[in-house]
Amino acid sequence: MRVKKNRKLKLLKIEKLLYMVVALLVLLTPVLIVFSSATLSKVNIEVERLKVQIDRQQNKNQSIMMKINELASLENIQLVAESMGLSYNNNNIKVITQ
Image 1: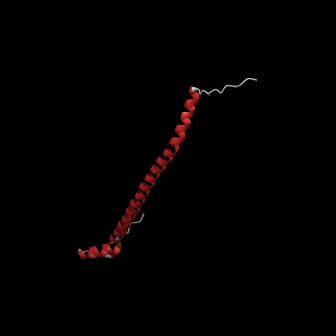
Image 2: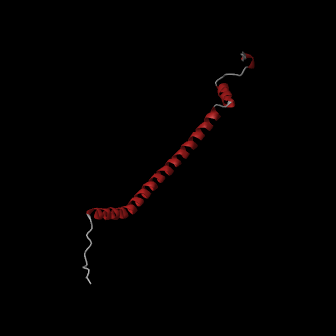
Image 3: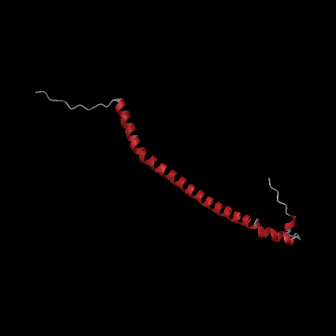
């Protein structure tokens, strides 16, 4: 009966490299997940900030359009014309048809 000698297993260089790569991936994966989440959060905050700015600008534009429509109304034009001494004379209006 032979007695087996306990031998230490020698790892090949390729096996060592593979173990190092796996260990590196296991350690870097959580870091990359946290980094990508932080970047995504930062982008989402910027998007929300831009949405607020867009809403404010749309409200300003709507207010300006209402003022334009008010100033361009026929009643307002007639009031301005009368205040400058002009009068509305229906006999001076000529209709051109084709």
